[in-house]
Length: 278
Image (cartoon, rainbow, N blue to C red; front, side, top):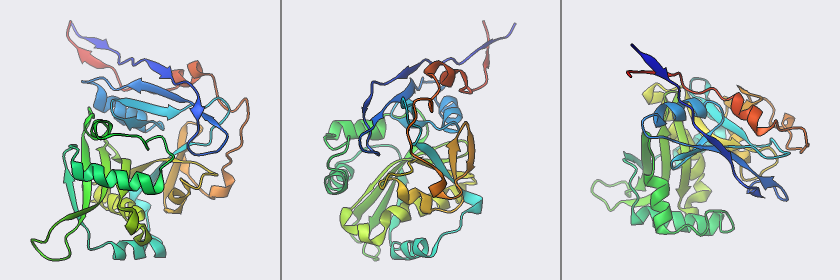
């Protein structure tokens, strides 16, 4: 006789802490652990509902009076690069891409530190040491890749210089850019934009419909660049929708803007039950 065992993860809420995107606000996250054998299905299901992965945890913003953070993804089939994005692609076309298993290296960490010290010295990751960096890269229960971009000087056999890295998850409907960093001295070449453009191409080649970019936050300069990509969708009010005009989305706070945690959890669609034998 066959029975079904429902997948019922436990959800928790973090304590409030300063928001990294909007000054003067407090952030709070709803999160759950990624269990071993069910990790892939749970990650796929919750990624479609605005969650993001960090090591063995899935999280989604659940701030007390703010709903500004909106999960964003690019529809690959409908994406058309802008003129400036085409220029970024040309400027960085000399880079060689290599996708490897999620294994941290000293070279990656050195680049990561230069990136943080230059661009995010006051951010929440500023004090991350090499062991914490290795955990961020390597502690993944799902299919993940480290996508490296190197400058070889254009000559075969030339010394390889690592200039950009992206930790990328492979979902059943797309690729998710978990975290990327690059040589800050090459920011003038829009290398961050190029990494996103290349992931659109990676998804296209793999026949996957979406590139997940993380959160877009109206009113945040740090996240504003994501609205520059065409065919962008945001997860808002429980559904994916075209972003439309970015100015139409407000970061205003309101005490009734967020439903109680119990109601949020009740609306989360979990993976289908799996058949098991007694």
